[in-house]
Length: 471
Image (tube, rainbow, N blue to C red; front, top):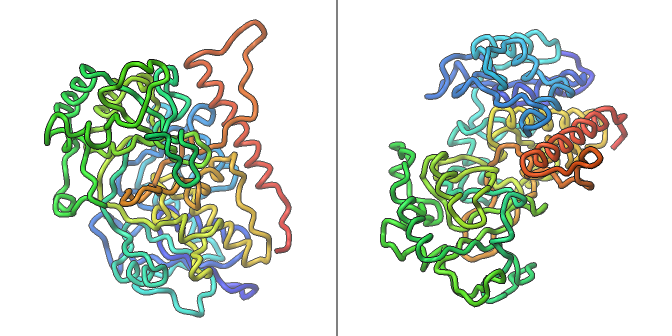
């Protein structure tokens, strides 16, 4: 190993760790990649290959114009991603998706890392915090972080848990809500901290609509509870909305759908029988979550049932609800803008443990962590990718793009999320149609996505071409 620079240590040989190691080494900085398999195996892994895909073999849509994950693919290709290069070489037919031969993909990543002269792979488990002499470390241990290491991380942060039962409410794109039926208002017009008194979107239901909604909730097909989940209490006492409905037909009207303190400006003389509220979910104001609507309904059922709510008939969901056990950091509180642990900046995190979801997102966070670590080692300025890029939007969500819950007893507000256009800042100018033509409906939505995608790829290219500057 060249002695021109001390190595960066990367812990974890999954997609994020493999990508991070590659990005560091291709910038001339030596890397030690620590992977515990085969010394210690897991219930999920079948081989000792790096970047083993333990679930699906799909990297989802490869459309770089109309799909946010396709934009992320394209940006990663621009950045010389090992994960995308291996995926492209091992692609199998999957329509518009990028799916791979999982064994060939893992072999390609493993071979590339083993053959790189600046990468040393050590097959060993790190069960405690890295030793003090490792001055630059990326932890990419993912959801299978060993209990001992998780406890050691917690001791640094003051947090009480890394693994807990997540209660996730559906999140809706703001521009898909019909504001001709819904309206902005807080209960009794009370402005909360930083609020205006019009901080929620309200969707009214009359008595017939409410009872039909309750019937649909109760009849909807539920996702099965796995054994270990059935023994885990709901996080922060949050019950699935369908469980509340089963406890009595009026339960929701005295819970998350209570209609008090609100007046419908579209029909001020008629009081709603029940009201669904949505609360701003990100600082950009592009995403809103359905308050109190954590659920175990299957995803298809959620979309069908929730679109019966007035104002949400054409709702586009950035993510659907769920309750499941998860493992991730409270990253907006614990990490800085370049993924370093505030309590110990020599430690940088990447991958799913940071609070992202999906193969591609995990690898993209690894790509950024690797580039940040290499720049730091080389004495260059740490410049995050622009917020207008898919990488920048994902990083902003992880490190502080969400809105903190203000209500006492509210569930943890930072939730893992796949990349989606709702994380991107709005366009400065709306897309224009050809002269004499007006964009409407689906055509308008597609034009907006294409414009956001083009902006993202142009800004990513500019970021990658920016000359290195001394820190």
